[in-house]
Image 1 (tube, rainbow, N blue to C red):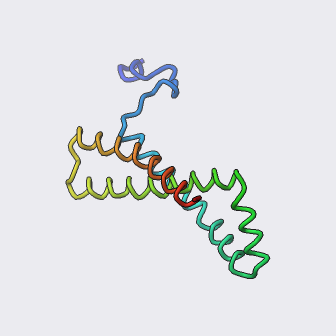
Image 2 (image 1 turned 135 degrees about the vertical axis):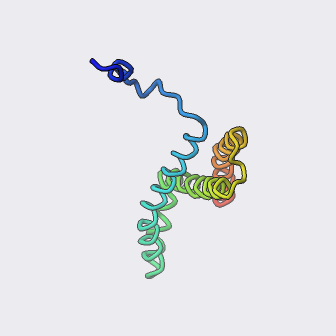
Image 3 (image 1 turned 30 degrees about the horizontal axis):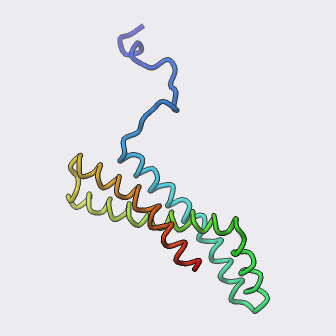
Length: 128
């Protein structure tokens, strides 16, 4: 047995791994991008159906007024807000602003707190 094989973990429990706050923000940025990518064709089809005629508009209106659609809209609003905020964070870090460890952690916390808060605000504002 060589000296490197003794340092490898025998059992890796993924539930016990603690990610840094920056990694959580980065993973959520990617997840939000995938959600937006998947939702884009669905939203385009709904828009097309709503613009065809009155019956199509009424059916889309009925579909998006269901409670499940409101939850899906909330998730999509969060994904959009989080993706924009985290994207701005990454762009600023790419040009050298906020790249220090404490500032990067603070901006990650800000994105993770501000995105759901803004999503809830925008969702309630849009429903009223």
